[in-house]
Image 1: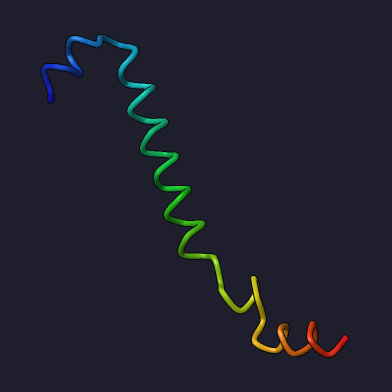
Image 2: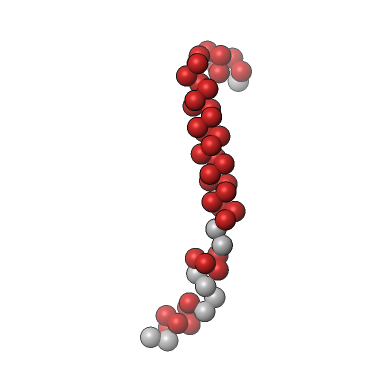
Length: 50
């Protein structure tokens, strides 16, 4: 794996850093996603009550 990074040269560094940043953002958003905010428990009752 390290050989591939070395073969890629200096351009591999921004690619790796942006990949790590994208993964960190995805994990943070997944952990911050609260199911109660997306679909509150009483939402279905309100929808059927119309």
